[in-house]
Image (cartoon, rainbow, N blue to C red):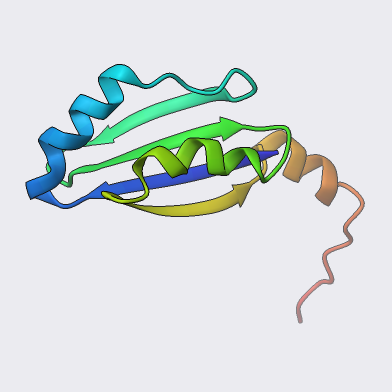
Length: 93
């Protein structure tokens, strides 16, 4: 299951989250596809592939007291194209 996770931290908690991240490892069952820092926004975007939704708790729980998470399910572009291949788009007049 593919998810996009945006993690935001208040500026005054920035150093605290950096210290935690140094000691933290991604759970073994999580495959990270991208880790992107949003410069100037105290935010990071992760794209992860996880076996089930409950695995997201392993990602967020260690930081839930100092960070805000926006989690969205996602599909790869190739998967969307495959799903839409049978879709017949009606012509507009």
